[in-house]
Amino acid sequence: MKESNYMSTSTLSDRSERVASGRLLKVGALAIGASVVVNLIIRIIFVNLLGIGNEFPPLGWGPPIIFTIMGVLGALVVFAIIARFAKRPIRLFRIIALVVLVLSLLPDLGLLSANAMPGTSLGSVAALMLMHVAAGAITIWLLTTRTVDA
Image 1: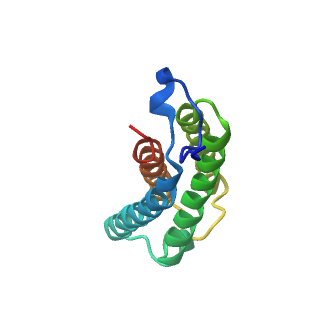
Image 2: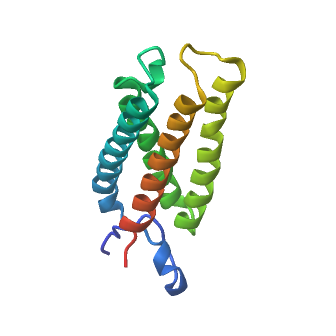
């Protein structure tokens, strides 16, 4: 009996929910690369337009790269687990990812409330939040469209 390369068993009506496990690493790497590049572009635009200096550490060069990689890797692991066990992995992952994305914005908003970090401003927090949304959108889109077996 030939072993299947799919992480989810499905019926004909669920074909769009079949995830090809062999594509996960390639698509995950693409999601990391694209998310890091877009987040660095956002960082450059906000830092230059708003004059955000080094006094706001989250918008240095290292943190956007490191935290973007960590976030996308986390999403990739969750997606792989969901794809392996869920009947409708794409739908379930999108729901979970959107909830996590919204929750990821809360710490950024918290920075505004108490001026918890030097250099915190509405612009610096907006940049962080936009980075979260950009990386989330790229990752959710790539994982749920580029790993699906047509």
